[in-house]
Image (tube, rainbow, N blue to C red; front, side, top):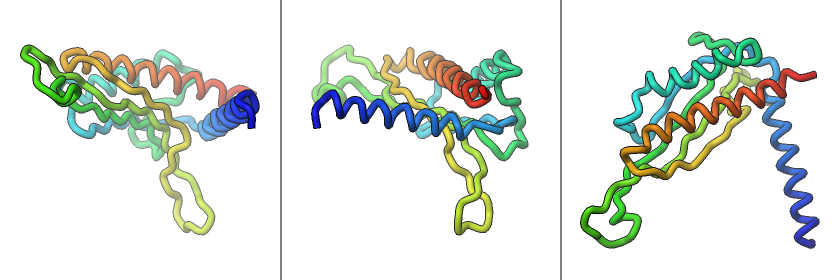
Length: 165
């Protein structure tokens, strides 16, 4: 298979999976917002991360789901950023070296779905996007919160596409 043919197949598969994830947002009217850390980041309070997501969603109304803490459907922000010293990254010690916040920030829409052969509805990820973060440890909290906003804006864009006829 040539490179051009392979890239055409991959582009088609990517567009197809993007459309499939947008379809998973159809009919979504209300979401609860949840924040999960692995490990805990001392510079990112849960309330700040949740407020950033809720602010983007409220600013996008009426073309965004309504925030409802009792909703079985979830918009879950997963922050998995670790402090890593430059010595660990480099493999040897240098004086006056700093630490970095390196990891992933992921936003996922989870819905209750019925699956063949399963008697009760189960929670399934119907949409997700993630970004790598790599910043100095001091700047990592701002980086994480900025990514949370960016990912929520991507969610709203796909949600609007799901609403379109």
